[in-house]
Length: 295
Ligand code: SF4
Ligand code: SF4
Image 1 (cartoon, rainbow, N blue to C red):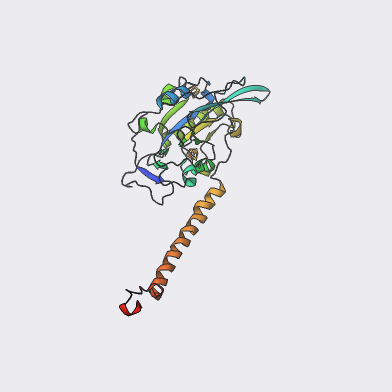
Image 2: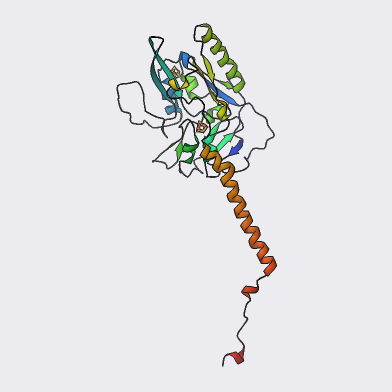
């Protein structure tokens, strides 16, 4: 599904304004992940590594199917496997772990480096390596534990939603590689409509709790996920039930930082007022020393 796209930045970390012109109004792009048809083949993991030129990350064989325990600065798409006992039977529950491209990104809120995290007009959240200082604060702001630090580059790494492909009208590499059609790409509106159709089909098939995961605590996500057991998102590799930006981050951004700016502004105004009132009386130039003062 091809959608019109852009690299126009509308929101930028540690800056009050984004740099977008605001003239064009573009639809938010989204992925739909239907976990009920995922077979855990990991074609999406391989496609992500290949397209993004990410090197292989060493794994440990723990006797399960997990490639890695968590996402990594150089591994942006991880299929999580969960084995659950449901209604007396065993079920495999798979989930595609990646950046969720939140409408209100906690990573961007938390980041103190101007322009290191940006949100484009089509909703994609991206790291700008030229500005990233590798401090890791974005990690503390993310309710999905997504950005990771690379010791090799000194920067943070995470899924870009294949912004390079999307900006020229292509779908993300993982979507192209998926053999079961459980991954879709289009506008948010299209993906929510398609996801709701799948939820209705699952309910008709006996999964009464089926639901579309698009949590409003982060303003909704750019990756919407169909869950057969929608009342238990945590069964899918610990997907948080009600994710939100951590309070400490909101507090810093909404209160402490503005108070800091006000304090600095107040100090500047105070110094200027003091200068106007007292002039530079205390710093008079004594002038050249006269001949009779030389003794
Ligand atoms: S999932 Fe985490 S890294 Fe991705 S946009 Fe949301 S807060 Fe940022
Ligand atoms: S390619 Fe599709 S089916 Fe295979 S693991 Fe990824 S999401 Fe699941």
